[in-house]
Image (cartoon, helix red, strand yellow):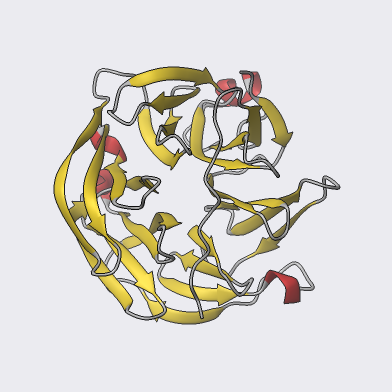
Length: 297
């Protein structure tokens, strides 16, 4: 499998990639650029919207709206009604006021709740962040997964009963039993120990066969893990910092990955000028699971 450039977006910190089946488009965020990106598959049209704050992650809603995990709040946005460059938002709830944190990785679980983490902005990313679940019915509930420095790798097993997550600097992907109705977790354990491998685990996705694909920060790689946590494939990416992976396209067999230009030297940027772009791979033996819509009704 060979990764090729889809959009030369050159994001400072591209993240949060999702396939929007309703619009036939890829959506992602440039966190530090405070922009939401969209690329339509049918006609190749790419557009962006500026945002009032950094966008860590987001969810596509059953109503067609977008649920935004802005740095210090959750908010609604309507892409179909956004005529100009700026995307108007409606705040739902503030997040961790008084703490030096911002939202980071997030994903809708199989039951339609939005699960996300908050990232420490203290020196060395001291672990003061948390994981949360947000739903229309229950509001905001904290998941008992401890404090976190840089939350990433949030994804769910095909049946929704297992949650995967990590604190990137710890270089271990974790897993736990997950009950979406009660927002409870149990049996927290190591899924994959990567402390002897290059790079740090960033965003992940689970395919239809229960294999976990992980974007690796700092190593030009995507790794694939079997359901037991064994690495069975490493896919090179022409960007140092791969950040998030997602399956999309009409048959959900295209794997896409965002990347970042952050923490790269001038020399590294000169040799990989497409860093910060979105790359795609036509997978030969894998298919994704349709993205669960956030139940906002």
